[in-house]
Length: 311
Image 1 (cartoon, helix red, strand yellow):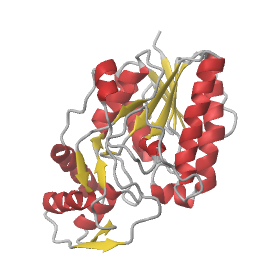
Image 2 (cartoon, one colour):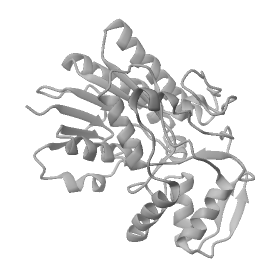
Image 3 (cartoon, rainbow, N blue to C red):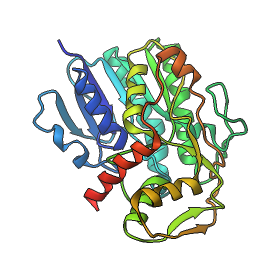
């Protein structure tokens, strides 16, 4: 008998790639998404596959699914600044009520539960790079707090279920990830830069561009998440690419790779925007034998080609 996984937010960027990976690993997938920020186009290639089922449902409400379930992977959430600033209450609800309902399903089915957490739980970090023992520097009442605190609460609730109900749980802290199926207008740096470059528009860099990020190609990210899922590690694990770059240099790379004539312009830095972001993936390497394999140049070329096709 094949195992079965429920993926909440499975029609989103990461969720849809995760559905692909699970099916490739001979696991049946039940994709649950209310399509608030997800898109059926991300999973339409799986329609007709006997190992794939789509359910349109808001996971902040009770989740009822019949049959045996072995894994519940909770990826439902707005995940870009433009999304969670426009949808602050929905973001808080899916991080709290949605996590509670997904954990309840895992408990009912005696399934392994994996929470998609985020590097944003570290806030604007005071240590660099960020390791899993760092508690973070988050403004709970700032505009970004709706996402940061939702994920911090989700981690706390997951560990409570692990300790109190003895539920088998995993927590992955996902750092900046990019690749095909990202939305052009989701407000994140990479799709924005590529969209502007391909359309010959000015590329907007916030602040002086010296803030750093570390970008992981989606194929590597999903591989790390799957390795965590099938491990026995219950503590949070960073999955990301430690190859750090300034946003300004990143914008220049996009301009070069797209052969664009776009000019770079500067705008005010958003409130509470992290100045640095780089994962310490020592634990991922030691415990999962995982590290990213696809360099940024190769990943960007594949991502730019995807955006060329959809623009």
